[in-house]
Image (cartoon, rainbow, N blue to C red):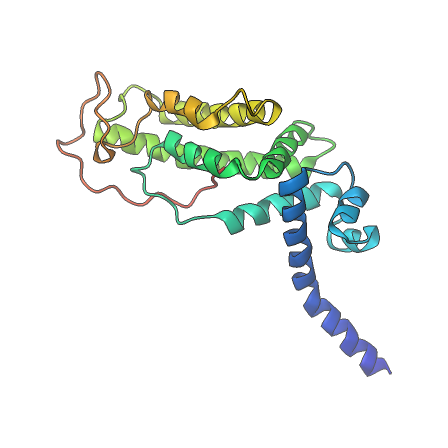
Length: 229
């Protein structure tokens, strides 16, 4: 009997990661359609999982929300575009994808709001801070690539520009959630792309006052894999 109990326990442990992944898949689908539930119990009811089972795999609501968003991004990830794709164009692509999943945009907005309350949501705060660092680093490299090609003025600070692009994307998506008929995220971002265009190889002209680095631009290296909205 003891050996049988041990075998059942071992099988349970092996199934745990698979069951956890199934819960995340169900939660992604529910959040994409309905948005974020108010409590762990309400989320469990929405995805057809008992509160006790949900608590077994996720200690609290914050852990579930973070893991759902992390899993969503991992599954939606595409091969990292080269640095020739401008920082703003990268956000435009993401905004276009997000049009079909407003609930997950709402989830992201919830995470960023929770992250401001460090004492109540320490894990969420760390996730969002790390994510922003990754996003800004990727966008800044794209700005530097644009400067190297002569498409972006050399006196623009890449890190400041990256923070501006991320802020514009997040702010526009929040406005879109609240009033989707009045706000077109992609069209608004296209205005920002006049300041921060892609490389000349994408057909962009050098910005006023910008000097191409070393004559005609050569091939740019692939951008490091970074988080994308």
